[in-house]
Image (cartoon, rainbow, N blue to C red; front, side, top):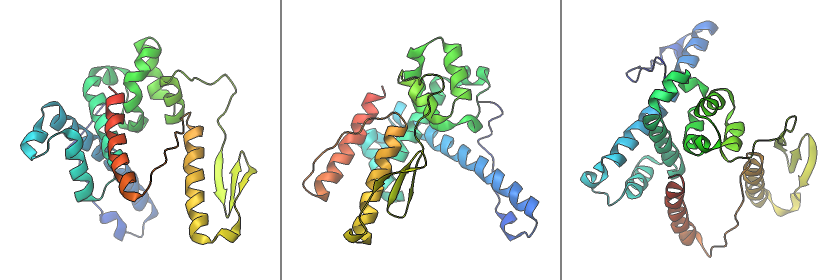
Length: 229
């Protein structure tokens, strides 16, 4: 990446300021620091995996190591795996990314799909799309699902007990089910809509209890790692 400085430090002094310009500048610097932090974590995870350092850290596998970090730091395993994919893609395509002028501002979240995208066309075109497409567009491109010209994915939002699709009421949930259950089903529907909007596939799985769900989630994350290879 261009002008990447992994030694950049972030100061929060701007929070005590009453100057809008200073707060804005500090906010923007913090966003840049967040991007660099994600890349730094990804590169660290990649190094631990590629050099099998997890064995020296009392973990039998990289998946077990990520599970340990997830539980210790209260982070989602999916986030850690995504950061690992970012680190792996950056390491593998570092020179190509630099030559294409790709920077962390262009979207680190697209990097996990770069390997798959490379099968969709010439390298120069893939890297151009990586730099210029938003995440949803690049994911669809990587999967070979490039939308037809003029075709747009539906816009999804929720308000109250209604899920709106392209500005129109699409799904209405009964208020009689109670706030807790209503909130639960809203979350399910929003995740499902976001998945479809991004060109993904929904695979329902029936599990008997939370213990099974936890074990299944662990196995699913491990399978996703293998699928990306």
